[in-house]
Image 1 (tube, rainbow, N blue to C red):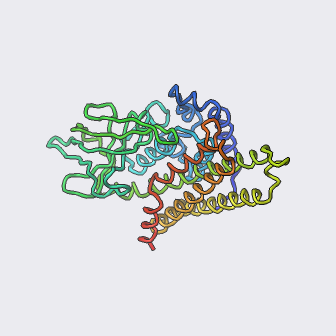
Image 2 (image 1 turned 120 degrees about the vertical axis):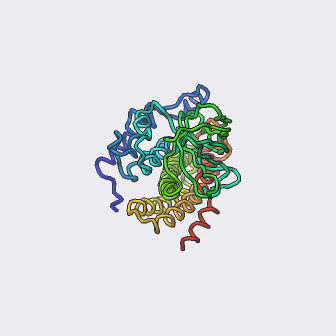
Image 3 (image 1 turned 60 degrees about the vertical axis):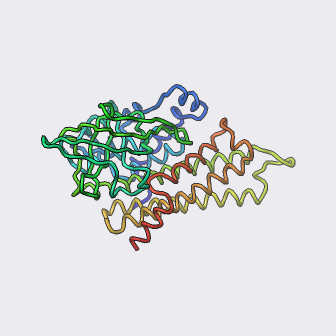
Length: 367
């Protein structure tokens, strides 16, 4: 894989960076949060929601590295919109399932929003033996009962892609569930980085026979691949978050004066910022390696590469963002200054799609 950006990819990056600067500036962030405003319609207008969608469903079917460019730029802008969890992941699950009746076209236009409701409190990051159960009825329909936690994008979702096991089985199947039908209850909240999330409870939800997206025979392999790719995108988001934190820190040290000179003149601080740069670029190398593993369609090597990437990137992200706040002193913890928000984003990202302990165990299991 050639890791130099093509002309087309540079245009994609530059357009995304301009969008973030114009629409997601930090000065107006508090106002957007208070009003509930988001840029999902703009994401659709920019064509970002169609990047992972097959051409046959009206999408662009672009490679993962193109989507990672968008994720990285949104990480720079600490965007609250769940591009990975409401845009990429549902689209990828539906595309891999290949079900003729999946509403991919509705996702592309942004008119209908989707979220993946996969994880449960008691099962942490495992999707085997879930407590959410689908019971097949004599007429071919399904009855869904159970609950899901930390559904990012679930607050705004019109449809949920739900992982549930069949009675008497431990492997999951995937269902598309109308989020507004009787029996679906949502408890909404915000994470510490101000992202909207919810816990969802399904109480005797009636599903039609065609609500099944992938049965137990194929759902596990579909989930493994889609979640690995989403994990790499989450790491790309972290790269953007780290890079912007370093830029803010370097700028602050150039402006802030102490003992009659700029802080950037002190060698110990110069070395400190250089260490941040090294950590961020080490993490970038791991993301490139994971992107290559995903592109190679290597089901054996991909999980190890992705887990190694998640471990390294999140360790680097916590260090870079934490040290950036440290270099700023007290102002780094204020809401009015953005660098603290970068740290909060990294703390949340570290727990999504498998924390370090989960990925260490997964990496060793594949050794």
